[in-house]
Length: 97
Image (cartoon, rainbow, N blue to C red; front, side, top):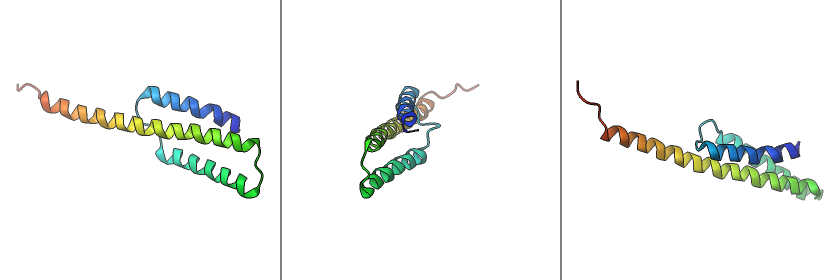
């Protein structure tokens, strides 16, 4: 399971980066996954059961964090595109009939 997540998150970040939009991406979901990995990492340290799984958790935490960075980048692109769309409509009024 951890290996599948480890492969899926970088692929998702790449796809989102190429898409250039945050539409269809859930910030709450990304934050929930980050929280889950933080809880898992904390549990490893508190239980004293530090093993290879901790390294996988950390790697996955980093890749999900990358998704968070891409989300905010895409959100800014969406905001910029929306602003340009409004400005474009102001300067290009339809001709009167």
